[in-house]
Every structure is written in structure tokens, then in C-alpha cells.
Amino acid sequence: MHDENSSASIRVMALHALAYCERLFYLEEVEEIRVADEAVWAGRRMHVELEEPEEITNLTLESEAFGIRGRLDAVRRRDGTAYPIEHKRGRCRRGDDGSALAWDSDELQATAYALLLEEHLGAPVTEARIRYHHDNVTVCVPIGDAQRASVRDAIARARELATHSMRPPVTPHEGRCTRCSLAPVCLPEESRFAAGSLAANDPSAAATKPIRLFPADTERRSLHVLTHGARVGRSGETLVITARDAPKKTVVGIREVSDVVLHGFAQITTQALRSCAAADVPVHLVTTSGAFVGSFAAQSGGVQRRIRQYRALTDDATALMLARRLIVAKVQMQIQHLLRGSRGKADVRSAIDGKLGDLRAAVRGASHATTTEALMGHEGHGARAYFGGVAELVVPEAGATMRPRGRSKHPPLDRFNALLSFAYSLLYRDVLSATLRVGLEPAFGLLHRPRSAAYPLVLDLMELFRVSIVDMAVLGAVNRRTFGESTDFVVTGRQVWLSDDGRRKLIDVYERRKHQEYRHPLLGYTLSYARMIELEARLLEKEWSGEAGLFATFRIR
Image (spheres, rainbow, N blue to C red):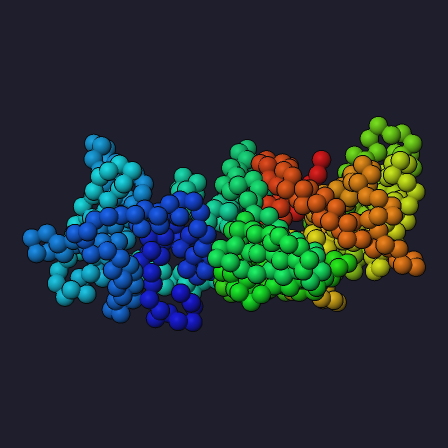
């Protein structure tokens, strides 16, 4: 359903969602976000497996008069009168006397189907039935004036909500959220937590931590294709990777893949691209050095998300407030990284003491910056101190060539910076995927400005995860002597690049780090870093959707 076409028919299932939770309706029908979780797939399997030959099944009807459309599970006749039957996997509602009753949302859905059937047959339909398979009971719903009015009211409310650019508030019925497939998008527990924190005027004052309503980690994994000339094709529901000289093909189920990363001159077929788009699997192209080239992803709907983002970030005060939060979080994590790395090492702590002082000064300055330019200045001063401190954390056993000489980017001038630059490119790709998944406009940032192929909003969000995902992982790998000085690097003049083996090793280090789990210090639950990236993107969106306060509260301890 689209704002510009108020005459478009409404799905009966959308009315069911509306009665269950207006926010669920808005997310699915207005912003066009739908997530098929295990309960949804199980419901679909149940409908396929139903065997009742005396019924008319899967009858699709549409009413121009009511402006609704839907597919009826089944139709039966009794004493010459037809009635619809709706099948539900779950339990029925119980009355005070224990009698079986229909849930309000199910009754509304069944009534809407009855009105469709009535118009189709040109004869009165006086009842509908709902079969609750968990309880093995059937509930009869009489179709009277009150039920008909409830459908008309729901249709009117649905059309009204479709004109709004702001989401409705989360439902007051908290129990419904635990069973909702869109809880990872809506984040209702976090919204309630943020509201309690704001009411107390202290984010740490809320007594009850939110319940995590989505998996701690994603089951899908990134598919990196590094071999020069390798080809990604499709076969059924799988992606098939064929290398030029390799006798054996690699086959991966497309629903096991979070995104496809084509390094260098690897290729992909149009059939595979179509399958990736259908499965919401973005495809990223990067150079052999890790530089971002471009991405292919299915077009996301829901212009309302971009309207809210535009309205917020064109307000300089809002953008600066969020940018301050972002940079303060980044510099505080840089401080914590240096403190952790020097713990129990008096000589190292003495060597970085001045740099820690500079970083603390950067935090104070960033906290009170009144312009973006001033904020970036404090961030830059802190970065110089930080990378000088990181060099002191490299153990002598790693070798002098693995010790960084400050931060060099384009190109990297030492081995440590070669590792950082490539790993940052991997992080960029993951943050971009999360940004696209959330439905934000990556080209419209709050701190960075367009100056290259890189998206400003992605660069913004990266600041929260450079230390935790990349810097700590790279330093740990270097100190464990994971990389060989000569085998994993290529030196051309003053420039240093990763060899093919070096890239493979670093990708393995990065991907393992990305799926490590960490407890969010404010929200209190544990997530993988991969999930944490998506969470922060969604919390950023909440900043301009009436549920502010939780973005950039992530910290390492």
C-alpha cells in the first residue's frame, strides 16, 4: 500500500496485523518490511499440508466496494449456506469459564473474509469459523452488524495510518512483542527502555533492562570470493563458485549467506544476482586491496524511513548532537583499548601516559564542540595520539616491521597499516549491508561529507566499531604472530600491501571477530558484533523516530 494511491486495496492479513499492533501494520504495509521467521514458515507449511477435500481451498477474492483483498484458507457449505474457515497454528483465547473464543485480530480477519465471500456469492454469509490447531478446537464467529462495523473501522484506520510519515508507538501489550517476527526491526523493548530512561532523565536509571527479542548472532555468513577469475553461478537454491583451475566446485545454500563479496576480478552471473536480490543478499565489489567499488542490493521500499532521516539530518543541531555522541564514543573506546593493552605493563603504560592525556582532552573537547569542524579537529588530535599509543602495544616478539608508524591510509606504508586498511574495508562493507537492511540512505550522513565513492553515513557508523572489531582483532593477531613478515605482505617501494595468503588470513581473523559475542553495557544483553552493527543502525533511526536516547551508548570495557 502506498501513500500516493489511497484507493489501492488492503490485504486482509494487513487488517489482522492492524488489530494485533498498529506498529506492525505500519512496518509491514507502509514501510514494506516483512520478515518470515520460523513461526511464519511453520504456518505456511501447515496450510500446504491441510487435507480436507470437501472444502474449496485457497480462494482469492477482492472487493472494490470495501477496498480489501485476500485469500481464504477454505470455504464450506452447511444447509446451503457458505462460510469461510480460517486455520491458525496457535491456541484460542479462553473465556472466564474456559470456553474457546477467537482472538480479536483473528475475528476481524475472519469477518473480512466473510464479507469478501458474501460479495462474491451475492448471498448473505452469517458466520465464519476459525480452527485453532494447537487446541484442536473450532470457534464460530457470527457475522453481525458489530463485526461488519469493525472491518469498516479497521479499513479507515489503515488508510489513515498510510498517510503518516511517523511510525505509531509500540503496543502497550508487551506479550505480543515476544511472538512478533518484526521485533528485531521494531525493537519494542528498547523503545520502552529508552522511554523509561528519558522519563528518569538518566539512561542508566531505568530499573528493568530490555529483553533481547532476536538471535544473538546471525546464522548467515559472508561469502568471500578471492580467487582471480572465479565465477559465482546459481543452481536451484544454491550459489556455485567455480575457479578456473580448480577441479571441484564450491556449493553454498543461498540462505546460509549474509552477503557476497567479490574481490578483484571475480565474477557473478545475472541468474545468481537475481537469486541474491530475491533472498536479500547484497553483492559487494572490492578491489584486491580491499577498496570499495560498488554494491548490488534489492531495492528497499519505505520512503518514510528516508523522509524521517532527511528531516532530522537537515537540522544542524540534531546532526551535531548525534555526531558528538559518535565521536565521544569512539575516543572513549580508543582510551579503553590502550588501557586494556597496557594492563600490567608498567613500561608500556608509562610510554602511553601522555597519549592517554591527549585522548582524554579530545573527549572533553568533542563533548562541547559547537561545530562539525571543531568536532573533527578534536577527533583528529585524538587519532594521532591513539595510533601512537597502539604502536607501543605491539609486543617485541612480533618484530620491528610489524610495529606501525602512526596511521597511513592511501597507501599504507607499513605492515600494520596494511592490515588495518584492509580490515577497515571489510568493516565498511558490513556497515553498508546493515545500513541497507535497515533502509537508511547511506549517502546522507551526520558527520562525514561526500568526497569519494564511500557513503558518509556508513563512515559515520563505522566509527563505533573500528576499535572493537578491527583494531583489537588486528593487534591480537599481530601479537600472536599470525602473519608472516615476508609471506603475507608485498612491498612495492614505500607501499605495503597484503599478499593473497595475507588477505585470506585477515579475512578469517576479521570474520571470527565479527561473530564473537559481547554484552551491551547499557542494554544488558549479549550480541555478536555483526548483530551489534545492525542494532546501532536501528537505534540511530530511532533518534529521529520519536524514540531517542540509546544510539552510540555501546562501549568496550
